[in-house]
Length: 115
Image 1 (cartoon, rainbow, N blue to C red):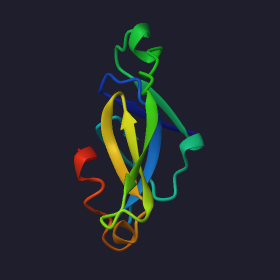
Image 2: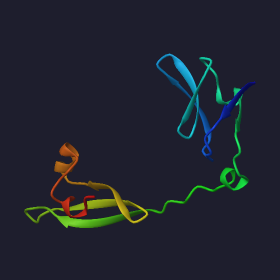
Image 3: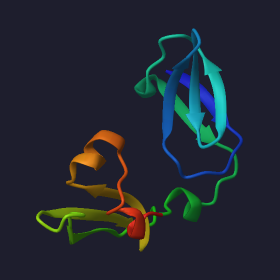
Image 4: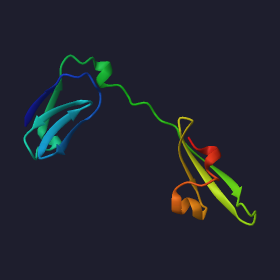
């Protein structure tokens, strides 16, 4: 077991990241170098002076919704579906079933819904 002591106060989980031939134990924004090949379950981590309410803090739930809108083609002979993805009421993605969106990942049908 490898003992690693972090200085940052955070409730984020610890991870091991391999980057440019070096391994790091990561807690929030703090990176501590560990022996190459170290696994998360091999680390015994501690954090200096962290209040219990920080450690036990629950992450905020994000409300994710999808809206679907039917739109007419420019000739008016076809109908496409624009899907608007939202996270906490903010637009996070827009998709359309028209061929133009399939090629370019944008189209005139999605413009009114873009973020």
